[in-house]
Image (spheres, rainbow, N blue to C red):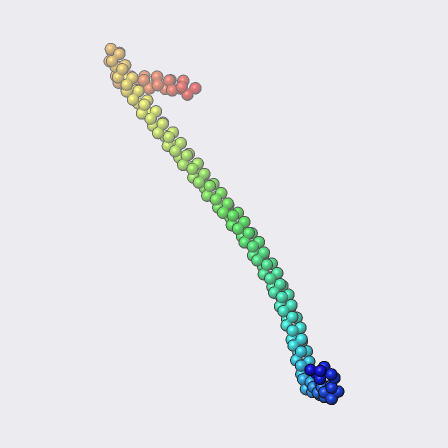
Length: 167
């Protein structure tokens, strides 16, 4: 066991020589390709990061454009709705005005018809009154006058009554 802990200069020499040969071989054949691969990998990562950043900026730009277009479309939609409401209100008012006009015409026609019917009823009533009055006068008056004279007298009395009523 003691021999393991004692330094052996031959073993140390060959260990150093092997180490230097390994370093030389690694430097000659392995380090340049490894460093080159690491540099290429580093460059690729930098390019990927740059591309990702560019893509992110482009995506943000496109997102802002889309938001602006959506806002514009929204504003246009609101404007179109307002215009449609104005048109609808105008049409509604036209329909109401036309209905009111037609109602006014119908009311005037109804009033004219009522006046005509009232006048006709008054005339009929006057005629019936004249006949009734004539009949009553015939019964009351004992002397027989002719019917035309009696009717004329009744018409005269009715005209006087009508004139007084109109005043």
